[in-house]
Image 1: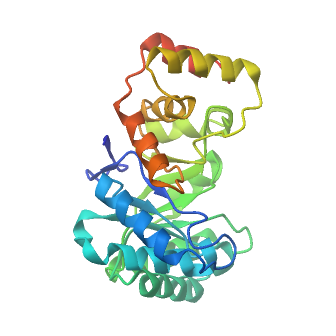
Image 2: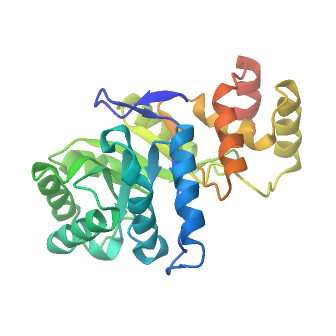
Length: 274
């Protein structure tokens, strides 16, 4: 596993985290595979996926419940658990209630990182960030961050927050380059903010040019195109990735990407595909 510093906290986290969207349902709970999903989560943790990303929205809260069951046999301090508050819960009292519910479902006393899942222009950012800072003071949250904030909004959040904003979680992969285009990636790298890439794997590539380039690089490393997609992201300073994995073989395949060292020429080639 590769470890990278989280923002300017000095703490290192696994650069390859585990995205849990779809475990235990999507917008609503799915109880049909609970036992299988808990075992999958345990398997992931044993492999080294100790950085687990979830949200109150996932599975209508059921995803957090399954994670809560899975982590019981592990030392809490060995895990880095991230959850996110939904945009309809960004008022102070709503956020603190959401946080309390998240902790109850996860069956833990604190989350390591708590994020605003999506911005909500109807709620003053100061109010939300103040509530999150309150959670930090109460020992319920260790660090705070944001998700789906563009560069301008991230800058605003940094200026209005009592607590350091340690990360911005955004969609970023070989074909979705918005963080590069709007200057977010560069801003994060210059200001010591971790960029967390969700949806780092493009299962269906839109461009034949991208597909061909990935296949050629993959051959050089006896790897899959998906492993190259991850290796490319992980090679970038200040970037970590949280791919989903529904099966143990996917967990293993993704983990192998941490062993791939792309050459400078390969990085330039993949960077140029934007």
